[in-house]
Amino acid sequence: MEILTMNKGCDASFIEAVKQESGQDPAQCYQCGNCTAGCPYTFAYDIPVNQIMRLLQAGQKERILKSKSLWLCATCESCTTRCPQGIDVALIMDVLRHMARREGHASVKNVKTFYDGFLESVKRHGRVFEVGVAANYNLKTGRFWTGADLAPKALSMGKLEFRPHEIKGREEITRIFRRHLQREEAGK
Image (tube, rainbow, N blue to C red):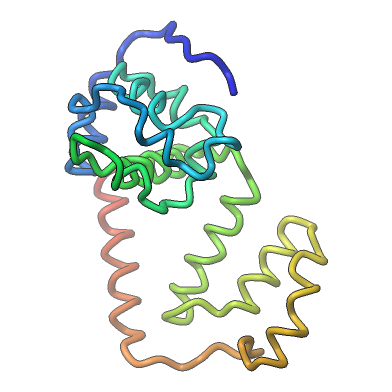
């Protein structure tokens, strides 16, 4: 874990954009550290959650968006549950991850690859097609045997299908993705 230093000016427009997208006010954070203390992934983060919040308060956009922590966050909401100020920290982390994605930052490429494949599967099939997501991930990352040891047991239990399930409401899912794309394009 690196030591928090701030050596660039404050990007006030970045702070405002996070406030607008998340509906949360990062200025409410008084750095109690409860979010970091409850986070099960702090051990793997380059910047702990409370320091992400402090960097956000200081408008350190580049430092945050290039952080590995955004991509490693499981959105378990432990940080949100523990916040005495009622800040939805997990939502802020999610918004920051989306901002990083939009700006082409992906500090943990394999996580982004999985994330992209997962969303593409939902977009295409209306829900996750697990075998397709796994195959896509394995091909794109070159990790061909990832999960191979789990497949036989999952197959024998009827947990994996070789074809995606047909679902009701697939058109509604398509409309959600279309609306999201329109919002993204309008924001550019």
